[in-house]
Length: 399
Image (cartoon, rainbow, N blue to C red; front, side, top):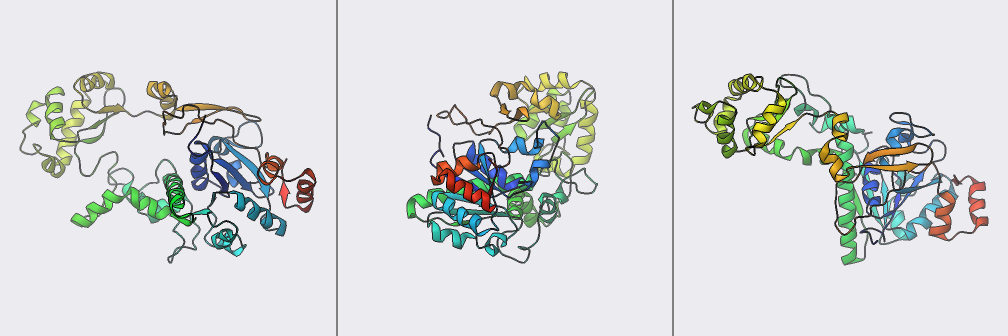
């Protein structure tokens, strides 16, 4: 079956999460992703997360499906020469080293372009390729902090907290995949590759676009508001007799439907709460009234009552509940790969559904250097003697 990216070869020099998340998104849709790893331990994320059978840990085996691994020592002359031979055969290079690190090794975009004018070279970094912070080391937590994301996350009146997932890494990975696809489309028009610059910082600013817009509009400094939403009320979670309930009254029509349903028709035209701006102004007394009401029934009772009237409502699920969720199961959102060492590995599949591509690739995360020889044979047409010489030099490791 044809896949959208089955004619695209990606050299993946990334590690940790942001870059690998990008290359996995491309691999899921058919790209031939060749993961170049250093000798020794390889990608540092191989030992992150919960232990599973075999040498790698859960973090790595979960996010590296559909790739092949080759061990290359890019500090050796033979390793550098091999990298450029692969560049000649590739469409895309993805890297998330500190800014300038590969350039200092003689492996930056300008050098790569000499070997392949159509190469798309995607660099994912904390702050981008220029500016006063470009040389700073940047992991997800640092970018959540510097971008302002932490300042608006957490309970109302409390200190800001880190998002529950590595949102700066994951957003950067998605932006990188988007940038790569745009560059591929541009190359179809011009025949030229380009250097795609992906900033984790700016990725967080993009997620904060409405928050920043509100700040510019009213000059008020945004603060954490728990599960509440600054510009819509009520739009948050409430306690019930059993479990917490999330409700989203995103407009006047829903407000007028909800009030009589929950047994409070008098709130509909109350002079304190009758319009959206009034509800924002008088948020505290309104939330207190609604919380008292929602505590009178169980979540299950409220869910039926509200859903029967098309009022948006949901439960706060933990991860154990989510993976068993009927919608998740019905859509096949959790997939399983068979890893040679870890055994059956369950993981989240790509959220993008293409009707013309029902058969998603589903190979397990590679062992360190598992495909070194195969890649050299398949991509570079090297002989066994040439491969043996590279391994003897220490430029190549693995199988």
